[in-house]
Image (tube, rainbow, N blue to C red):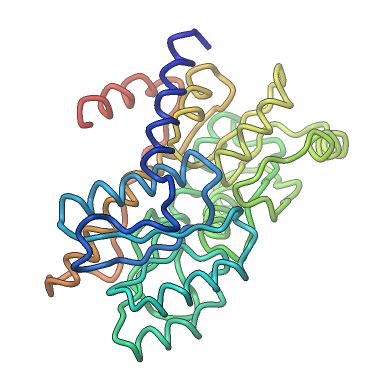
Length: 314
């Protein structure tokens, strides 16, 4: 990467970190209406972007956000404790991206009894009916499967490296990807490795998988952080990597050829739209139960156009 590119990414990360610093302690200036927000973690560019988008929308809408985050996406116990703490603070609304999509009914029942509306963003909640703001993960997986199939001419073997399947976002991406592959191609899905969430695989784990599957031609990684780690260990390999999350380092990897395709889930947009959806709910506006945000598949052919459009709209 050129020095100017490195400088740009460094500045971006500092801006995002500044926007999300001390968020476990601080409420925005206007605390007339407080939205309690629980993320999955605070250890990636994606989650910092979510946080920044929420803070911007809160400032514009005249509400406050109180954002809390476990250190990693694997700490479901701590996330539940943070949710309880926000309810004890009697926030006006609660927005959760669940580490476990299937273990939320208890606090949602309590929130309902307290008159606190609950919203899911980024990842759906499975065991209770609450509004959802984010992308259609099954459709996103389907589109990545379609792109992969075209690259492999509908034959060969692929692998899937996924986050925790208790999170509906990762499970949905796998489901859509596998459905396209099974219905439309002769491609074989050789393995599904799960449990990485927003974490990188070790070189040892990647080496093991490639030794066990030397004829793999493509890999779906359900998060960009995981994909970037795989890319680093597999430099020079002809294996096509497709993934999700439009964070800057992943977009640069598409430009440089390390990632073949990237589904453009924008953390910033999800954060922003979540706050606006909650404010509209507060106002009594008529809204769909799901706010599905658009996703574009970014490749080497369209990545520069995608960046220009984003720069123009920002």
